[in-house]
Image (cartoon, rainbow, N blue to C red; front, side):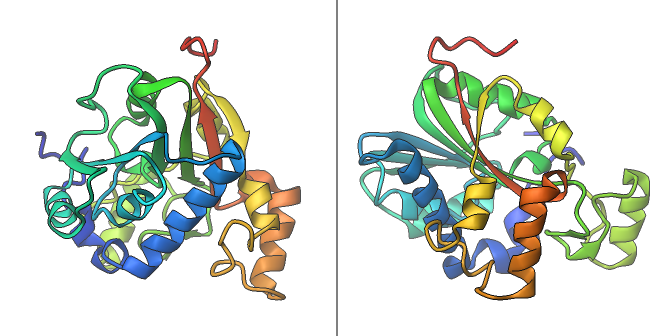
Length: 259
């Protein structure tokens, strides 16, 4: 396995408080389940799922109560070890895999979960190609993706970190004492649309923002707050500036990539 600056091999340790926070991770899992329930409008327990970038396994473990089978993969050895030791269910599996070379056959899974992962891999296009390959025809990828045009970078809480040129970002993050190198490579809205061009995009971003109770996002969008009013304004009128997109990416029923 490569050990260069293209890979974040120990991300769970870099952001330990986030990745091992069961309450916080399960809140994200509830949104994933709500979105997929809304899309499928039927029981999910006959579907096979792979969670790419599953890290400590908290989300995969939660999802295993709803789906027929759930597989979690991550390049992070310590995170996968933690998941395997702490979450044991008959329909739940964890493997240390590189998401740009996933060790499963074509047309394997009904659902792929890829939540806040694309920016962590050396080649996001290769990641999406692998997701397309392992999805069954007509299958769905739950894709949560941060926007490069973000005032405050979500991982390190530094203003404009993802916006400025990468050479400056490396200096900035080191000077701030957050890391020695800025691995993450975020795309703008237009870059993300190009990234997922092989799929049919079903956009849930506006629906989730405008219906936080239905999709369990009230913890991020409290009632009658300035933050929520701004989020509603941006998502409905300045969509290209919204900080995070949630899309369902559907592989064509015939399995052929979009042109």
